[in-house]
Image: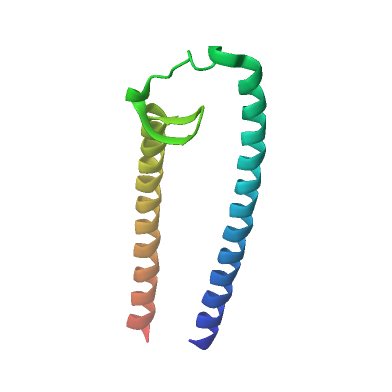
Length: 109
């Protein structure tokens, strides 16, 4: 049990370190993007403000100009649902085989 707790703690600390690294990377990217967008805005002038996007089909906004549409989320959900059904049935068969083998061994003893 102690080994399991140690493994859990090490995995948790590694996950926290990875999260910190990713967040610092993302913040540096956002800083670079803000610098790029400010230079692009000054060169474009008022023509960039004339562009607009259709917000009715958006489920989640990531940042400016990077959007996740409802259609993309629907496709992803459908794929995950089908994969879950497939894995569920194969797991069910494996568990049944394992239980039947275990019961045969117990019956033979």
